[in-house]
Amino acid sequence: MKEEINVYCDNLNCSFGCKPGTTLSELLSRSGYKPELPVLAAIVDNQLKELSFKIYIPHIVRFIDYTHSDGQRCYNRSIIFVLQKVAAELFPQYSLIIDYNMQNGMYGELRELEPEEDGSPKVVNLSEKEIDAIRNRMQQIIDADLPFTREKIPTGEAVEIFKSQNKPEKATLHKLRGRFFTTVYYLDGYADHFYGPLTESTAALKSFRFESFSRGFLINTPPITKPYEIVKVPYQYKLFDVFKENSDWCSILGVKGVGALNQAILNERSVELIQIAEGLHERKYAAIADEIFKRREGVKLILISGPSSSGKTTTSKRVALQSRVLGLNPVIIEMDNYFKDREETPRDKDGNYDFEVLGALDADFLNHQLNQLFEGERVELPKFDFATGKRVMRGDTLKLGEKDILIMEGIHALNPRLTEHLSPQKCYRIYASALTSLSLDENNNISTSDNRLIRRLVRDGHYRGISPEATILRWPSVRRGEINNIFPFQENADIMFNSALIYELPVLKYFAEPMLRRIPPDSPASTESIRLLKFLSYINEMQPSEFERIPPTSVLREFIGGSSFSY
Image (cartoon, rainbow, N blue to C red):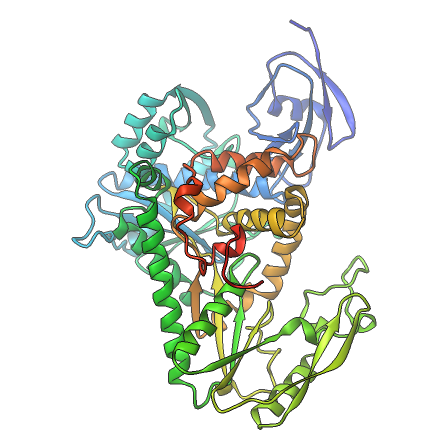
């Protein structure tokens, strides 16, 4: 064995020698690297590793803190582990569920082991005294600086541990995964499994908020832009209701977690899941159209917004279709045609044109034309020429008939400044997003952002000629645009449409996995591709003979192809 191994530290742009078996934590101490924020984990040859990882061969290492997305995920997993341990100590007779992420925190519940008669969860209402007890015990564990340790044990042994902890979803998931060994993390004797590294110890978890909300609780950690600063954001009650409805619906179907979903696929229930999920969507589209029809005397404009890959385009087409069934005549106006000329477009901090801010649109001209249409006038609609960066008129005119109703889709559709010169009574606002409540297991939920990223990877790769590598590298910028221009206005919606489908990840895996495997290991997108591949490895994919039964009007067809709509 070599006496010394050469490790290149990307943070310091230099190499260090170390003995075989040296941990990343020890290397960090010896390197002299003194970052402003605590180091939480490291990227080793483009793979995320905890600081206890031991070095036996040469590596390229980059230490990361909370400002890195993987550092934030590492922090959040660790704080959930602390909460999981506390819940097991104080309420061993119940099951702790981390249900879904909202902008103001991760929502969870304590549930009784047996559900209601209809299959919906039976939630335990925590008193403020019990909330305080959980919060205080979590802080005690954090202050005690307890280490997180990692061990591989036989999968059968891990499954029995999860069963004893009232985690049937986790037990089923690992039983069906077909691996001889399973990685288990320990915190002061309490075992659990997580889908990525944890911090070195509880002392790294410097900031969190734990409070009651609805029937359960919210656990809030700092935003990535303000490390260790807890930011209070407004509660999103409409968004919460959509998440909750989907979560309870999944529970009633008996497919709340990926383990149960995998079991359903193995039991040849794929087509049944497709039919049920699509039937639910059909009812939702019809209900939206019914609401628009009720307001037809006043409402003249349908505004649809949502983040990337949320299915906005299909939503607008399906709502239009259902509106036609009721006798209305939807007319779609493209918001992009109201861009300002290129020389008037605002620039970002780097001096590049910023097409995602509201100022890139000529909102005054848009409002003027809409008011003209509402007054019964005929207007000449603009067309934006992206090649020249100019708005042009080509003689395309429009006059609204008695049954005509406008539909406009775009990222700023819910921003009140976009339509500030229109009567609010003339507008009906729809927010569409893939708000999945499907979880990997009881305390590892699925990020709605990851769900949308995988949708986008598949669509970009197959139909837009954009490589998976380019899509991944572009995603942080897309997310920043959503945070600034879409999410702050979600609650302005009159109604929210959840475009998530309970069966979609097993379908998307079939397309996404080969794409992700083609990203070279030395690519800057490699770390993210490895993370997504690991996530997808827990999901049983559907086969073409199964997903060919997806209707041609499904929102998923917008991403995998085969839609009867034109995009």
